[in-house]
Image (tube, rainbow, N blue to C red; front, side):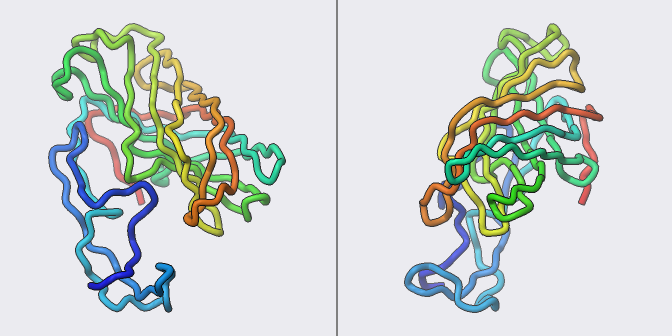
Length: 242
């Protein structure tokens, strides 16, 4: 149990505090590997397999008003080594990818009027030769991606007027064959839904955010995200696919 040890993702913290909308959460064990003085793994066999960890593995129980799941398709624009690269991406919610958005009415979040939103899952994949091949854009586990749905003055979900604006402050990561790249700042993702299920909604983010490797070097910049919600499912419960 003595250091150095591995297992804490960039931006994570040792003290885990309940996030808004979480009823209960508990840390799950993780494998601990031997490491050298530079905190690099030595070998592939853990010396202690189940060690307590505040993160990165946790379970959380939410109590949203509604759950929206959607297949996503769209594109990312990256700046890599001075080149602008457009990557077509897609994610199927039936394969535990795509998007899952939790909606909390005023009776659920207890913070006054308005409907709160939480992007609990975002996972889309594509091919980017400049970053080594197959990549995935996903939300960072350690930092919740919250936001709002509607004008912010509704006293219930049923009071939403359409089209309704969806704003999400996302914390993104790009997984590559050579390691995960972490966005250095939140990326505002916004769209306008014509109806509650959000089908056909385009989620757009125009920003210029560096993507850092584990050693702190900038490997790319994320300059644009465009995702369209397709084949949406809405309900008080949602299927879990693996």
